[in-house]
Length: 157
Image 1 (cartoon, rainbow, N blue to C red):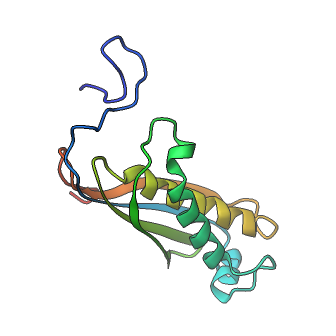
Image 2 (cartoon, rainbow, N blue to C red):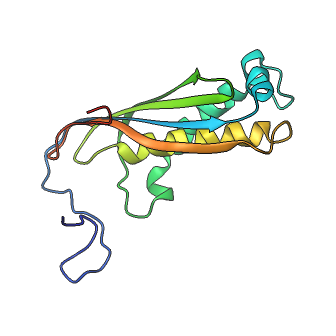
């Protein structure tokens, strides 16, 4: 398997996307945060002292996705059409964060979707750490992608 970010001399290099076609690219990602059931209840009830945890985490995730190329050294700056973040209350004590990202460009938007859920999860941690320092951020993953030469991917496949 060839690595796309390594040149013919084995050195790290940015991928040249100049000759690639512009296509619609989408990606979804998810992360989960395990916490005390009481903390999850406070998030649901919007009673965390710092404020609306989910609204703040949503904004943080969207802002972070827009700055992915500044955070990940070899990422391209993409013309993002949309980043959305949703939250799901799963088992007792588990918050699931999901992102959707879309652009029309020459390279994929997976890193933006992953960055969005990662920073949203970190924001939840930051806003709730006074109530629960035992929270664990886990399962950060790409769940699907479409568009581009490598084709579609779905984690459930």
